[in-house]
Length: 505
Length: 44
Image (cartoon, rainbow over all chains, first blue to last red; front, side, top):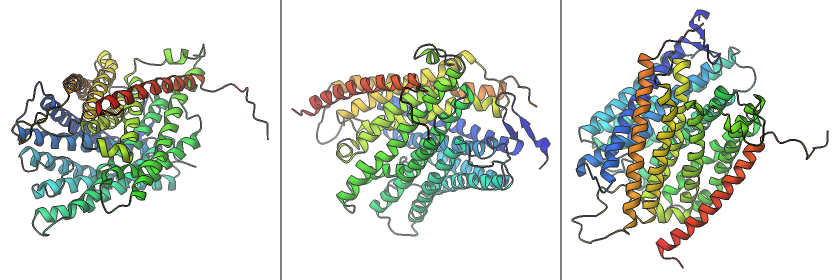
């Protein structure tokens, strides 16, 4: 491959190959588009669950909830992660993407799969929600869409390992991978295991929906599905933490205080974090209590240990770097003088704090056997995963976008003032939404129900009046988050199309 | 092997103090939250 296909980014000094650049760009564009659709669906769902508004009719509520889950939780995040796969397995190593056609095959499969899922859901032929639990049955094309998307993503994660093996062969890196790439290696290992579960359960479900096989055991479906459903969130955790480290390095020059410890923490994720899925099976009669308690109350804490290591290592790397820049007065001059106006930096700090305090801590608590039984089907869980996947992963990915637009699209950000407040607006909104949901869930408000007044039900039930305040809190927070999300989409697409072109070597 | 100097300057003292502050705040919120939950669920 000719050397002229490489350019050097004037901001980061990264050597970027044209083939990797195009793959990253198109995966990012698909990610932003699916976030826009998923976010809009989320706003409509929010305005329906907010009892004072209760916007949508019942069938549209479940339809849009299905689309919200699939676009916001699966498509936006996995498209972004595949962009990260190419960024960390080629750009960060200063090499090219190998077997480029495979990257495009993965992208095409994900794109076709995603489009198919959205079309079938919007046509009202798959009101089965994100979990698609059998015996709820959707159109076979819906399951085909999920399979195509999962297989595309699976190829995308396999592509990571092809790139690094061939890069090592060609001398792209000498010893171990940079930490950002190491984090994505952990994410890709979990990704391959996760998406294999997805393919394993959706293939028989597709055959069942076509009446080729007569039945699917619902408990078997649930068992294998959560190997996809929850484990895919662990891909997000690894990718998000890798983004935290990379942002610290790019924005303030942060290096991990002890790199071996940080790498060990990623290995702990690979070994133990998937056990978090176990709490979906706590009422399953097949598994023994011993098995359940060991996984949810012991093994899971080894993954928590990994998160605690990262939670100290990343802010410490920022402090050490800023102190080296001369901000040494007192305990907190470095914090005061940190680049808070840079949305990449502020976004990552907001992501770390909100992920830790809203998503992480509640996940550990709700994942234990005793609490899971009480809370599992309440709104508290919805609050928990909006604390992890939205306040944590989505804000981290939004923050990293503010670096990728100049690095990869060679464009300056438009509306820099709005960009600097966007993570704060979105973060405040999601935090309020998440706390409102968790508080309402503590009063027993159900997780997905269209109408919590249960109008027309044979038995009447009224919740504690305090839930009105918490549901309103959720509503106000959600509207703020939607405003922050809309601003992000405008800035991302606006910068890609109208941003000032940057000089490159 | 050089003897470990306990007086050696900490690399990131700010993060250490921040962590202690967060821990203290979390403990207060945690117990307040437990008390609140006990009231909701009627646990004496």
